[in-house]
Image (tube, rainbow, N blue to C red):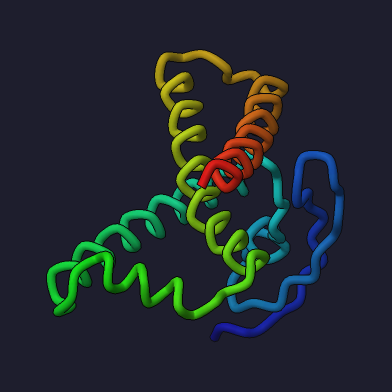
Length: 149
């Protein structure tokens, strides 16, 4: 007969963080599975953001193309419609940044991935440094694009 039992198991969640776990289970379970918690690092968040911006950009472009095919009037009509809404400069700048930042971030991080594909930049300090450079350049190119538009 299988019984529930409690086991006090010493384990390590991460290689540097010792903890001990109480496991309530039908079978012995690895403490690593039960006590995992996310450790957010810059490379991990940049990878998730890179995928998210790729999905968002492809979805936005697809939606724009579909609407261009389906809507009855031409592009200048809808552009004039947006101008007639009298959107303030702050909201307009925020909307422009919302378009420019994902595009510049995804492009620059894609270039970073191309360097990784060639086998360069895999040491941990280089990964963090290139990540911070991509974030800074993405913000700067987005601001420059907004100022230009």
